[in-house]
Every structure is written in structure tokens, then in C-alpha cells.
Length: 252
Image (spheres, rainbow, N blue to C red):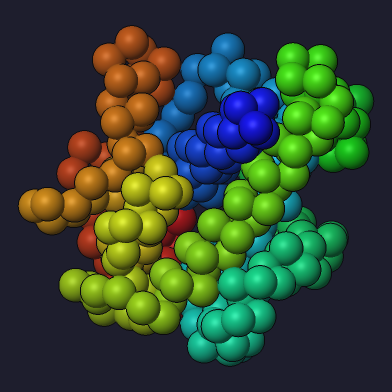
């Protein structure tokens, strides 16, 4: 029983690592250029994303930028307003893959992130990366507990990713214009991404907490990394925009 408990905890910890990598690197650094990351930390991020999620960064960036270009309008890859709450919450991986595999969409929205040699050799091969990550868990925990930890991580990570899009555009506070919402409880679980209304209001901000009492765990890491000189911030103060669609894409 103790081994199962440890495996579940390990799976949840890796899930939180995946959420941190997603929000800091894929979302804030790549998709919105809210911060720049040093080459060595970029290499670490790319490797960890590869073995924990199998995500190809340029595909993730393209899907997310399209979301900002057509927020809650026809063309949004994963809007609960367009597709329905439960489809986005439970089938978000399918909705993501449908757009991520469209070469024209990726070329249009992630033209600044062409595949490099490391992508062609390693990072474009999701199955290999996930296999390495799962294999490491099996070596450390034993094959049964390793597979359990990997399963917990995969299920929770995918459900939380769906929640950012589903809950984050349906339920919560809207201090700024738009249908995106803030949910502090969700922000705790996904390294700040639950402050989704704030993000749509200031997409190039490296921090997602804009008001007193809001907490963005992802910003804690960014602030620490900045002190060590690992990252640089695009704007010290958030720059609010009004409206959505093309205005958000232009601000990205």
C-alpha cells in the first residue's frame, strides 16, 4: 500500500513539473515571448518537456496562438463556448491534436519556431521521449509502480490542461473584458494558469497575478530564475489590451 501511495505522489509531482514547464516555457516564453530563457535552461526545458509530456513546442505554440487569434469565436481550437464544456474538458487532447497536426496552422502561427537538428533527432519523436520518461520511473520505482506513476501523471496532466480551457472560459471571475475567467484554486493546481482572464487581458505579461490577493506559482519560479540571471522579462509591468482576436494575436 505504501508503494502505491508513493507512486501516486510521484505521478502527481511529475504532473506539477509538467504544468510548470508548460506555463513558464511553452506558454510565457515561447507562445507570448513574455520572457527570454538562457540557452542552457532552454536545453533543460526542452529535454524535460520531451520526457514528461512528449509535446512538440512549435505545435503547442501554434495551437495556443490560434486560440488567442479566435478566442471563443469560430476557429478557436478549444473553446467551451464553441465546442461545449465537457468536450473541451474531457476531449481536449483530441481537439489539440486536430490542430497541432495541421501543417498549415503550425507554419502560420509558429513560423518563428522552425524545427532544428535537435527536433529532428530527438524532440519530434514523442513516443521515444515518453518511453524514456516512463523507463526512468520503472527503474526507480519498479515496473508496476513506475507504470502507475506514469499513468497518474498522464491522466491528471491532461485533465488539468482541459480544465484551463474549459473551466477557464466558463466559470470564475472576469475582472477584465472577455469570456476567460480567473479561478485561484485552479491556478494553484496549474502553476498560475487558472488566472486565465488576467492572461487574456495582458498576454505578454510574464506574471499572471494582476491584483491584490492573486497568486501565480509560476511567477515564483520566474522571479527566482531572474535573480540568478537565467531569464529576462519582456515587460516589468503588465500591459493590458482591450478586445480579443487579432488584437491578442498582435500583442503576442
